[in-house]
Length: 111
Length: 135
Image (cartoon, rainbow over all chains, first blue to last red; front, side, top):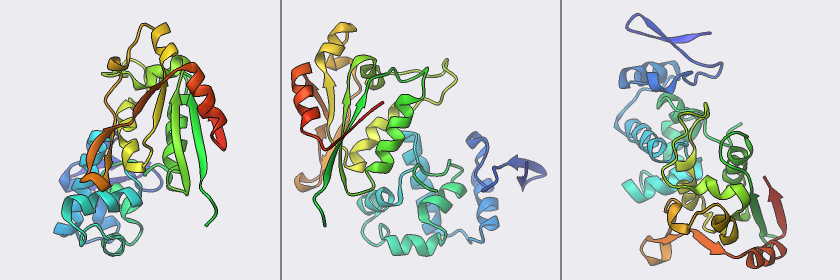
């Protein structure tokens, strides 16, 4: 089992890089995962990550991209809730890749 | 675009102990992403899936009852509950968790998703759908 290195500890992830135990997530760990994904986290990235974590907390699922776009629009306005903008932040898919950084399971319906 | 098919998912089993309820919910969430009009019906032990204040910690399964409340986001707005099944189990609609959807045309007004129906009404609903899947 491979893992992320954080302060001398190894945090296990599955073969696709999703955390084995989602309870181990911290902001510092998110930065480590982001680095492994070649993403330089800025404020906009964190907004998406925090949104996903709140959504998961409330509904116990990671939303599909379509839902993410809709809900981000509602919360932050059209500029943020834009599919293209979200893909620019997370080139491998705003749901798939952002969920990985947010320490959540892969969204339902993602292959 | 061809006419949208109407899907009805029947949920007949208790939430934990078997994988049926969770599988149904996942299929619904995936299916709702396509051009489908999706509704759910809960009958027999399936009505337990919507019970309020579920605690799954003793089951060894992840609790997923909160996820039903996300269905509105996925445009699944009709959750039919058979009243005879509720009554047989000593339950009332008040024992179920509140589930709502937001009406974009009315400034995101929250509207209830749960619709109590009788056995006879449910039979009519089943007849009125193009695809019926039973879990």
